[in-house]
Amino acid sequence: MAIANRAVDRDGQIRAVQRQYVEGAPKLMLMSAWQERLELHDLVTKVSDSCRKMRVDRLLIEDKAAGHSVAQEIRRLYGHEKWAVQLINPGAQDKLARLYSIQHLFAEGMIYAPERAWSDMVITQTASFPKGKHDDIVDTVSMGLRHLRDIGLLERSPERIAAIDASRLHTGQPPPALYPI
Image 1: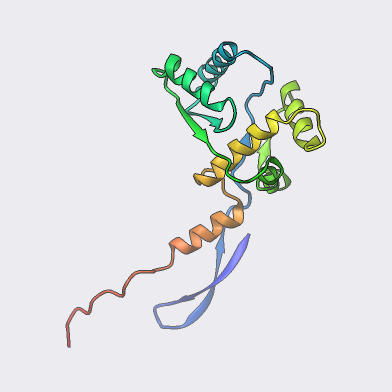
Image 2 (image 1 turned 30 degrees about the vertical axis):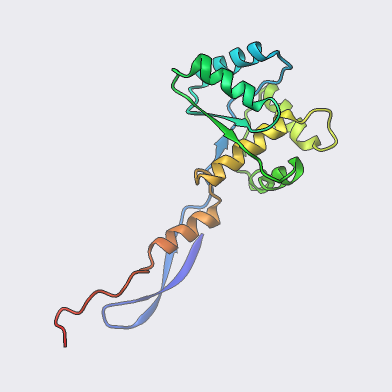
């Protein structure tokens, strides 16, 4: 993508400058997924095993329903591990609104899913929402992607280009005169 900007050269002439940016957005790859109905202890054990296996930095847990109990138990049993536990409050948005807020990431091809049985499960459940039988993975996908967007790790190409252009603009005060009059 080339964007024309105006620049002033040393002679004071205004000229058009073509800036080149690399086309394409940062990509995100789904690494693993599972879905089971488990008792609290079995769930905590399976989550901790998954965190260890995937070398997780931060475990996000929805701050609703049983999320408090799960987070407390994981912190109690596995507080010494290398991952942090963070409760995420989805706020007043319902599940459909949360999914719509990250839908464009899929439409723009930013999310990659390898050809695995679990990725088919994720894609099928997400695509059939809200009419599907289950929606747990939909919650997980929307919460994870929304979190990555909120902390700035997942940007669309136009956002990244705008940030680069904004960083090139001088927004501070003009420098003081060398020789005051």
